[in-house]
Length: 199
Image (cartoon, rainbow, N blue to C red):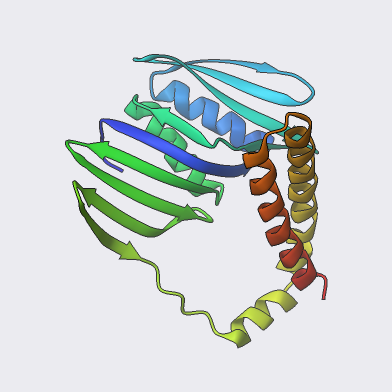
């Protein structure tokens, strides 16, 4: 990833274990950024001092794992942007990254740590630069479901379900209708995946 003027991360969802969080902190310090952290029972907050001022990364703690999920996150310091991008890839996370540079926007849709679609927008023009082809057959899907990976995915999936249920509960309490809708959609997706894996 080259240097750009501004990056916006949307719909970020990345799960980290504690060693990976420590690696990320170390990488930020190596990049020349000052990092402070505060940990409670429910959250870990990293305060990163960038050239544009302090920036906070908040991780939710769920059963020994750390989930970084932000709806919208602006980054202007390239050191923080590059490190965040690298660890989203490394942790096989999801994000939509908007790169703004000299009148054009490049939008990368990242799924499981890799770009599946890249779109360039210049004024009214929109051009798909890259789109990952889906070359999976039904036999490959069935074989994948029979593998032992499914056994490893189910506990993580249960954590994701618990987290999304907690998010839905908070959204209902706060009367946040947009978040309620997002959480219900996410829960439907997770339920479908769980049904497939538990066959």
